[in-house]
Length: 242
Image 1 (cartoon, helix red, strand yellow):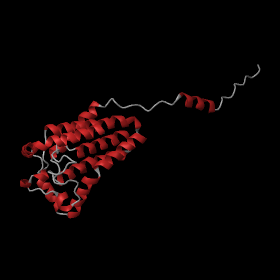
Image 2 (cartoon, rainbow, N blue to C red; image 1 turned 135 degrees about the horizontal axis):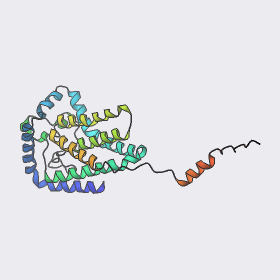
Image 3 (cartoon, rainbow, N blue to C red; image 1 turned 90 degrees about the vertical axis):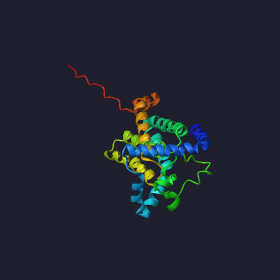
Image 4 (cartoon, rainbow, N blue to C red; image 1 turned 90 degrees about the horizontal axis):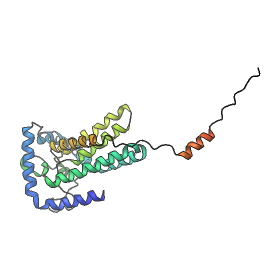
């Protein structure tokens, strides 16, 4: 985690001189989505803007759920599903590392920065906002829209919980990445393609790590001996006299 954080900070510094490239890439992504006939983010956001409570809820979801949900997921897997923990921890680490590499190679301004598209920065208008002005924000890389790690991490959480549990309700965990995708698009923090690329990366990592799960550890030898000692002895066979 420390290594990924340091890499993120290096990427944040590296993008400072590539703001122009980030806006050029944003124009490319926007037109590519129109070629692919993906829904218009502006039209979708206008549906949310009709109800202020929904917009504020989306902003809160974007700001609050991302990190706590991921930490809770890792703790749950570590404590209750240890045979699956290592695999999904690695998937999260690799996904984040791949995302950082793409952020460095392909800086991308989010749609909320493109005023010509008719989109609103809902966090700045309605609150709460987790970002300051891009020129003075030294904590986060605001030109790192592709891929959406919000969507990617949410997909890993859903995949891990579906895989590690057996209840028939486990498929409802898919609501988390679906809702996350709607939130990041509706708040103008990401394009649809950001989520699609994140989903593709998660799919590749799930396939690549499909054989990396570890079985539950065997019962220690001493414990097996104690169990054997405590087991009731079989009654001796009675031999009837002939």
